[in-house]
Length: 122
Image (cartoon, rainbow, N blue to C red):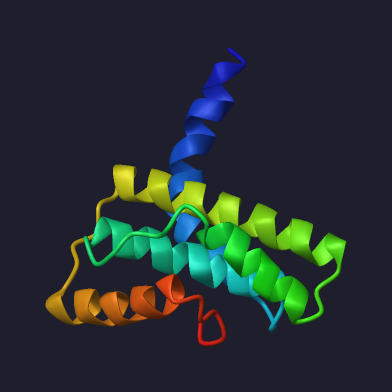
C-alpha cells in the first residue's frame, strides 16, 4: 500500500517538472543560471540541436566560482543542474514535446556559446 501514494505522486511530479526550472531560477543566482543551463542543454539534446561536452558542468561551475560564488552557492548550482536535468529527462519521456525549426536554430546558437564556455547569456 505504501507504493500507491508514490504511484500517484509520480505523474504529478512529471507534470510539474517544467516549473522546477522557474522555481530554482528565481533571481540572478548560481542555482538560477545552472537551472537555465540544464534546461537549455536538455532541450537542445532533445531537439538534436547540439549536445554538451562532458566538462560542461565543471566549466560552468568554474565560471561561477570566478564570478565570486562561494562553496555553498556552487553546491546549490550543482544540485540545481542535476535536479533540473533529471526532471527534464523524465518530463520528455512522459510528455514528449516537438521542436520547431525556429527553436532548433535558437538552441544551436545557444549551444555554440555554451560549448565555447560563454555562460554569461543563459
